[in-house]
Structure formats: structure tokens, C-alpha cells
Image (cartoon, rainbow, N blue to C red):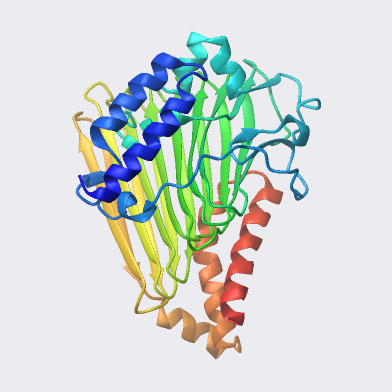
Length: 426
């Protein structure tokens, strides 16, 4: 182990000593043991071969204390739950005006209560069990939100988890849990607002009950160029449940978003879509593992990348089909547009199929804007820069088409348009 890795391990061990008495000692201890056996991942770890986290972190920043003064927040999308610098802030959250059938508590309260069922949902068994950074998150989790939607509840108002980091250099570890009861319907929005050269490790565990439907939107705003962020999503789907998840990543520093989904009930349906907008020396890695454990499941993954200047994009996708998961229907697709000779895209789609009655496929493309399409628009009086922006907006916006809420769909599309406009003005 290098001196840098040893120093990082020592700093993280100090964090663990501070957190191991904050509840869920058994869960934390097992997670710390898994992490300690692996350490921070580098390129020698196959699932991290394009993102050297050990090298990127360098010196480990101090642990966040959650004491930041109340920040100015934009207008909420619905019932908002706010985490600032690693601490759940009820004073900034709409905990007294939640929709019927929705309850909330802090992760700290859950850990203190020792609720075995909730703790199991917080760290479910599934395809993410071998990931060292996810184990580190479980060992060091400071706080988070525990959101429950009652069985059968039809929640029309969006629920928003708003996670904000300050401008100071600090390490932040949060883990949140959303339990969607059997037959319930809800919309959950995750918003991540970056600060300075922060080192962030966030995780959200979704438990979607039998027959439940969850629309999930993640918006990751741009962060400081020195930021290092890892965001993990764990999803467990029951029988005949549906999860439609869409993300927008606006870059900034080094970002890894990893999704681990287990379709644990028959006829479960998952749709994962995302767009990444990268410039400067941004590095954005989206790694997806979807595991079909029961028959008649359906999964769809569509991801789009727009890369400018010296940015780097990564898409790693793996669909696993267990032997029992007959009649699985799976399709995975990644497309990237490179706007600069210095931009880089890494695609690695995979299938692991152990059943013999399935329909699964994958595809990945990487290239430039279509010259014929540009010529078509130019010939009809559209200026070259505007024509390029229109094509890029359509390319990225395609992944937002499954968002049922028109206002949310329009908001994400507008963010893409703003990013393109800022590129044009630069």
C-alpha cells in the first residue's frame, strides 16, 4: 500500500472510531471490515478501472460537522427534506406539512431505535454488496432521511430530498432510505448541490413494495473543479412493482454515480435513464448493475453523454439474469457525443445471463454530431451555433421523455438548454 493510501486509511479509521458509537454498531462494524479488506478503489479494481478514486482523493478532508448556518434555498418542488453538510435539518424541511400517508424521521433516530426491518432495508442484500465505497458509506454514515410511504397511499405531491454541501473542504457521508409500501404511488426527487472542494459519499436505498410505483428523478448540479463525489443508489423491487428513474448530471470535478438494482419480485419493472453534461476537465462515471432474480422482469437503461473540452465520461452497465429469472426482457443503451478532440468516452456494457428464455441486448455508440442534420438545419436558415444546440438539446432531452410530470420534465430540459447556452457564450 502506498503512503497516500496508508494516510487515507488512517484518516478514515479515525472517522470510524468517531462514528461507531452512533448506532447500528453491528451494521457499521461489518461494513468497516468489508471496506478495510479492500481500501479505496483504484484502476486495478475492475468496476473502478476508469475512475481512480484513491488517486483523486489525495488527502482526506475533515469530517463535516453539520453546523452550517441556514442556507438560502430555491423554491421547493413539493414536500422538501433538507440535508446540509451531513446533517438532516428539520428546521429547513417541510416535516410538519407532509402529504397523507407519508412519515419522516432522521437516520440518526432510526439508528438509535435499532429497528431491525428498517436497518435491513437501509443496507439490503444485492449487487452492491462488494463495493468498497458503499461499505465505507455504511460504516461512516452521519445522518440522512428515512421516508416511508404507507401501503396503498397515492401521493400526488412530489417528495424532495435536497442534499447540500458548503464551500469548505470537508468529508460528508450520508445515507437515506425510502420505503414505498405495497400498492403505493409516489414521486421522489433527489437534488444534490455541490459546494467547494468537498469529498462526498452519499447513498439512497429504495425499497419498492409489491405493486408499488415510484417515479424517481435525480438532479446533480455542477460542483467545484476540486470536488470528489460518489452517489450510490440501491433499489429493491417487489412483485409487479415499477421504478422509473431519470437523472441529470451537470458535471464539476470527479463524480461517480453508481446504481445497484435487484428485481426481487416477479414481473418487476425498472427503467433507468440519464443525461450527463461535461466540460473543462469534468469526470463523470455512471456505473449500473441490474440483477433479475425472478421471472417476467423488465429492465431498460438509456444514458446520454455530451462531452466538451477535456472532459471524460464513463458508462459501465451490467445486466445479470439469474437462472430462475426466465422470460426476462432487458435492453441497455449508451450514446455519447464528443464536441472536442480532447474529450474522452469509455463504454463498457455487459450481460451475464444464466437463464435460457430471455430477450436481452445492449448497445453503445460514440461520435460527433451528424453533419447531414446540421446541414439540413443550416439550409433552412438556422445559424450553425443554434442548429448545434437544437440537436444537442434533442439528444440529451430524449431521456426525459418518460417523466410523467410535465413541469419536472420541462425543468430538466431547461437546465440542459442553460448549459448549452453557457457553452455558446463562453
